[in-house]
Image (tube, rainbow, N blue to C red; front, top):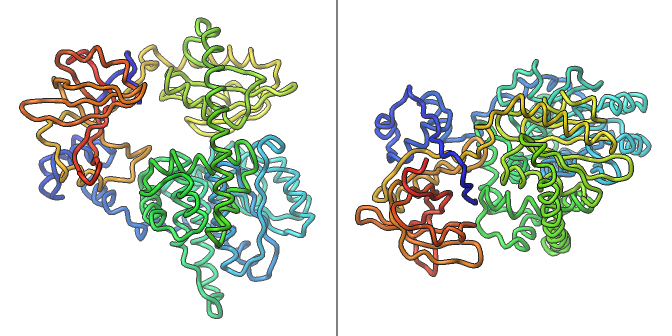
Length: 574
């Protein structure tokens, strides 16, 4: 992570109702762990204990979700009567894993089931009208959407015309009026009593399967056939949950934690092959987010996401390797295209920077709609502005946006809807379609809204930390203790600490962009790695303040503590 010159280093708010000393005694943890726990939004000691245990046995009853009874009644009837069930997925990792999960589990229930994943360039985003018509033509009588459909009113009406019953499972922002369907499962519904509101699409699909299994059990369905063990699908649930960047707290944390354990020892042939081509040995949130998920995503961005579904459903590692190698090649192509698009976007941004000081809206005919979301994220990371990139083609364009704290992206697009043909998404990520001749109008409207919502201070990047520490506190025992707080991600970020007034010794370049050095404080020294900070080598004289994540480093059989630097600046500069 590059250090931005104007970034703010902000200590995360601690729960003042609890004390670090009492947590250390009651939980038998170190001061470092106690300080992190105080800054994770946990209100009581019971909340903290539940967080540490992350047990799936504490999962709230899926029956609490609005429409779950209607969904399981209709789905169980389709399973028992041998109806053809069509699963309609989405082309990102969340949609692909949810599709594979439903396919695998429904088949194990004895259901007749097929799936459809839209092609990004041909079908666009969301529930596909042509897919519904094709499914009905093939004899399907029930369609289940995963990770899409919450705003698909026209498509839902068409399904009803075709005699195709529809169960929508989604987690995106809910419109004022729900589509016409047998059931609409979405924890974000205002009338939904399910307490876990931040589930990924694959999480909603998993709850549907949990409720279905119980419904069939109550009907005596499992008396003459083996009942499926849903725990074997948790590797898919974790993969989709982590990839969709939902908050890793509550049920999401429990699902991700159990699923990561399964991923690490996965017997699923497709994931064995994928880990092999990605060079992944130890599975963490980081390796899922940066190594495994991008390869599955690449197929949907550039080719056909069905390749990802088939990989996850494959029965043999040998057969899965061809799909995994294809995804690896496509991912390399995606990386090249992404870098080209980023370079072009930065040139365009310089042309608009004076007029658009609070936001970034750019459009270009050279861009591939499959990579603009990733590039928008990188623009936000670098410039800390809400960003919408639009891939133009003919008279229209497909856009992808990312935002920062202070501007709710979905609501912003809703305010700008007069300029748009369609839109959908979340607070920090969204997609849109737009006519080419409305782009300039949308840019002005979006910028005006950003100026209303964001103050100059909001445009300064922030790096959050969990308080100040001393080098003498950092040893392998405490690092291992901190690892108990994993999995890390949104809602449960990696611990980051601040150490003040250290001296830098032996700063050396690693490659073209990185630095390696030792920090010293009061007779204690620790090695550091600072990615992307090679340009700071000549300016590290005098006392420095350092933001860092402590980690276990294993090299040539030797295990030691290492500091992964997040930011560095002259002491007391902020």
